[in-house]
Length: 457
Ligand code: PMP
Image (cartoon, rainbow, N blue to C red; front, side, top):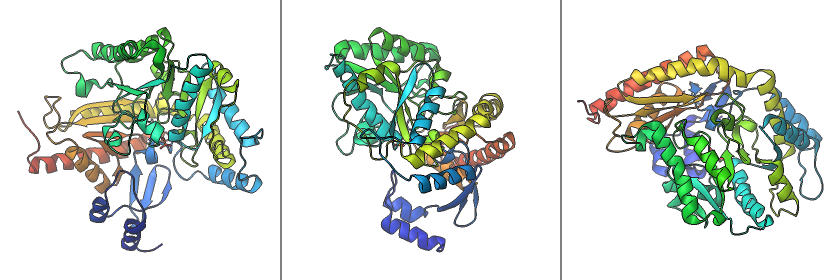
């Protein structure tokens, strides 16, 4: 390939990046990832970078699995594309839907496919409203979501999300989306006991339903464990109360499993880890381990029966794309046959939990939390307090840079550092990952100290 500097210049000239400014790209010089194997990326300069984010929370089985490449090539030759719109279907999509129905809990037995998580959440918006209309309750159209949530970038899914930076642009949110507070005890819990706080935040749902009107609320959507918001693990009191409220007021519960699904929390679905019974689950990312773009909504027998009773005027050209479906099916075969979910639950997860929580000893770290293979640490200017940095995001940015310099990809959300490594990571690789994270934290601490950004008692 061309030299790095030339590739960077071409990238800056023609390739528009999400969530990045032109100045940032010009000043910093974007990293060019050229290949990957296992949990390691290689860049155009030959650096080997440990990917503690599994791409973007998706490459659960790790990079470089030839089986998926072979399946994709075979399927492309046999049947590269066909639609499922007008009384046609194909073998890969049938096999995949059957497999997902087997893996999903309860009576979540039906899949409406999409090309991504955003598309699937757009489907959900239309589907829950159509569901209630078909049941003779057309006024039930409001969907309640949470501040700081991320459910995608399309107009619909971006509206479900609760990120103020997204809502500040492009006319979001669409009507009839309502947001309540998140159960983020560390940042917002003040002096309250975490469980009491979790309960109070869950009861915000009940308050919102009563204020908006029971007859106007269609659904509540949330991730079992909030991912892009900063890996926020709710207090144990939170989800049972949410479930009780959804049951009481006949509100459909949508679990966005785009990150949590397919093993990340140590069960097949985050809903199982959190003990909830959703009516609809959003899936994407880990469904194919990112090897092909595919997503979907898994819905209950009852929802599928109501939606299918008449035409649902909705669908995407690439819904259940045969190549993506074949790749996803092969990915699920690998997850199952290699016992990857059990590996997270019984081996890598407990090992990582011990090492990750031990980072809580670091002078820069306020709390270290993890469930399965998704963890976060809060960076604080003073270890004896939960007070944040005066200028939010600076410490996180410095830390991410120090990680990169140490050939480690961790993400920062404000001043929270998050990890979500490939689920197949070994205990030896976890040691390498934690070693690099510690070095990055030390270097970050030194730099923040030099810049007088730390406050010491
Ligand atoms: N929901 C959640 C919880 C996500 O994390 C994401 C992507 N980060 C999405 C939905 C959107 O998925 P996609 O980017 O595939 O559209």
